[in-house]
Image (cartoon, rainbow, N blue to C red):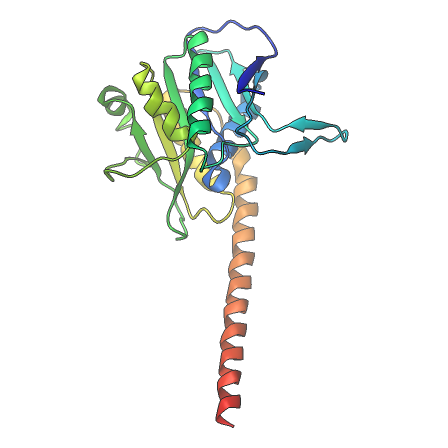
Length: 258
């Protein structure tokens, strides 16, 4: 088996924009693009398979099996879109696999005359709670950076020289730049400990303004509230665990004194 993209439908698009949101920190990119796919009522038209993906099968609702894959969806509108999401990315340790899969995605994008790419993902706050997620951005060139730099106060362009963007979100733009694509990486700020729909909403808010997609983000509020409740439960559990460990440590000290 080799890395390949299987087209399910022949389509015609006018200068589409590629939007990538594969699994990563807080599942931010994946949540964002899956919401986009649902709201825009897009249609799947291609699937990407690779031996560099995890060696496992996925069980479907009807008990059938399928390979791990990524998927391409399309949307026709004022701006045509190709949206990429899926089950997985290549394992972080497999550099060759990352390059191979990204090159295949770029080849496919060229076929449909894609010129601009937007990659969505997460930026770890180092475990700190993030109440109002910012969106940290970087781009392929100064022209596109200047074009969107004042679009929203949540959008912060990164100046941490030497920092890395790991995986497809970084490589699609870095390799794409060498192949005359242009684009932006939008990373939602997150603790990274749990899935983060709030950060995904911040990313979509900025993408909305940049591309003029104009979709309502209210549908994410339920997920955000559920996530906040989960975080509260985890914090309470952590506090109880710390108190228990402190008490046990204190009791051990008392036994030693006796």
